[in-house]
Length: 325
Image 1 (tube, rainbow, N blue to C red):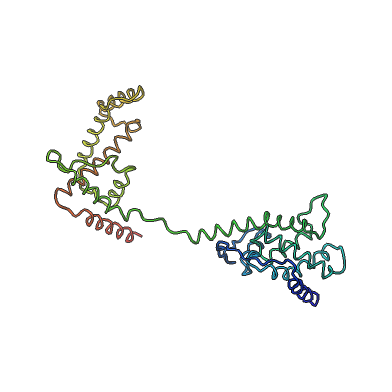
Image 2: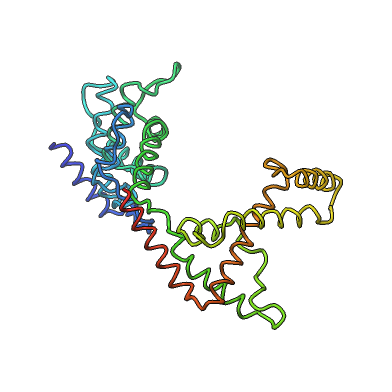
């Protein structure tokens, strides 16, 4: 401890004498706040240990004054030769100051996110031979320490950070927006558009095209019960028949279209609904859009406040759902 205190005094003297010891002041983006309770069970011990170190309250080295970092590195670096078995004594004070200064400059440049406890853990693991290659010779040198920190960052810190970020994102994840909240207004605006584009020959007859792509409004109206009792089953069958005839009579755009049209028409004349025919989906979609148009036209004709009516239907649907739960 006395040796460490003496080195601190040496550092102050060196700084006062003009030795280049920079102080880092970086405007970095805010670091996500990780807490130990974000560390899940079942991780590899080395990754779990790295995750807990990341969650510590220590600042990253990029946020430390270089003079403070140099002094804080004295103790972990002084143990490296001893752990490697190179000497029974610590480095001399002057050597340790030079090494600490070089390491501080290197980590703030190349490993700015690391914390002091992570550096200490990487040094201990490096001295144990954890990342030693077959032909490597362990020694207390700047390239060796840089290699240990790089190995720690890739094999332990990176997977630990990935786990913590996933947990943080999961906690911050908001429920999906309720797009249906705007559906009553959308249907009312669609009705206003149709009413505003009416003509004496075609009162409330024109709607924008394409209308209700993906049948989003149709599906929502059906879910909240807007179509309940609007048409009889026979009317639905007749509507599908009319749309199927229109589709079959549409001029073909290709030979495949022509063949499909012929087969579709033959099935209709035989009194069969072509369930899996290529034209079947387009007929069903056309029926849904026709139903949407007819429903809007009907409520416009009787003066319904469509938006208020749909809000009431939605509230009733939600009440039924909560009662069923």
